[in-house]
Length: 331
Image (cartoon, rainbow, N blue to C red; front, top):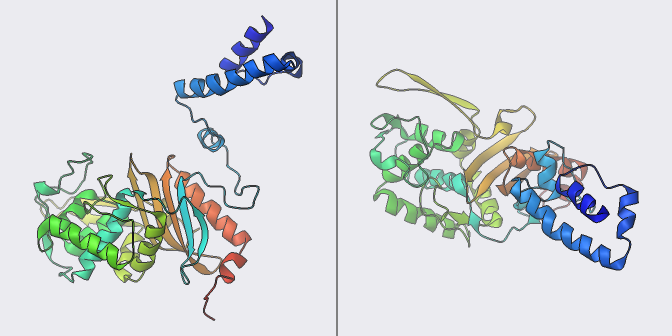
């Protein structure tokens, strides 16, 4: 009866077992029975309640602040994959599952912007949005009306700062050869940059077939930082767009809340999300007076990627020598 009462307490998530009850399980047989119960029953109960099982997820779900660092002094990240690079030398400062290619969602739009700019098409050219630009993959919405005309540079800005999928689709479709040729150019650019595991299938990143490893994305961000317009447009905090036909004003904000914070000095940024990719974030920022590239993939919580970025920053600020002693540093 005591054993059943104890199991009932655990299944209902009640207070911790008292030492008196725990002593009932000192026998070898009962220890084995109880251990088996914990392995099987508790994960099942957590899943039945749709609650995260691991400690990091529980802490985030409860609003509890995660520890900044692990016992080894490394950043304690909730993102499934991560990479931190010294932007000047390319030296890896931190890596977590950094070699596996995974869906990257709207991080794809950085490559889209680079390919458009490489083509040297007129940035002030008015492009008309078409029904072909409607998202039929994820059925996402856009406030940009079909039939409206927008300058090419405005569509690039909206794709980067507001992550607008219709703007991205229009950029690819309106390029010479249309979307198929544009996607080919994206993959050719990836090969030129040495993105060995990157693969692109659409300009917006809506398909889970757009994949890359964190190492690929570190190289992508470093290359994109050489494009002044990508730096400017991706870090635009907000933008008001007046529709030419109706005069109605649309207001957009950057999808990266850190860009709108005075607490960060961010030179390039892009967020991403589809269910297959989770929450994603790449950025280049000044940390400890040095440029650093951060790649965070497959974060599940609304603010998990932001929390991870802040933990990385605190880690580098606490250990500035990790950047200062990177090989090949000039000066």
